[in-house]
Image (cartoon, one colour):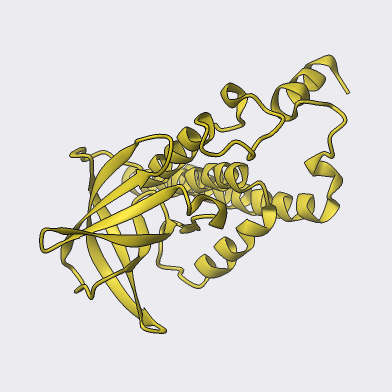
Length: 232
């Protein structure tokens, strides 16, 4: 192991003696497969763009390649916050069924549900909702009240306990599912904090980063300094 790699291991894991992710051959094979598939998809689309004579069509293909690139980065960031490749299994399986969806939805890991909350404003009253999954521009949540599709709703994502962090969200309900009496809503985000340019995935990760940097979640990275957490 090079000195540079040893320093990196110490900075992120606290020691070069800790069990390394790469020692789990099955998880490494699974992650490698995800990355290889995504890179192959990017390469295929870029080859198509290079061969395309129409400039507008080539630009559209390059945009598609960028979409795949962004999702690849999100997979890695999601793995960083879950620390378990098995969490990516449902993401791949569930989203593979929805070919029309441009973005993958990532479930909020169970360990963070105690620290991240979601409120829904309904008829002037703030009601607790439950964030189920999220993407760059959408989310699914459990609603305490019945909602109608295509209606605009106001949500508030916030952190609990030690830190006080929140963001206002305006979203449009795209579908409603009723499961065992619970109202599950899928919504497309149209505005975050009065900004038209937004990335909801980045907002959720920012909240999780804030939780780790506070005293609210002291056991998540017992051997790593808060300033050296491996978030991109």
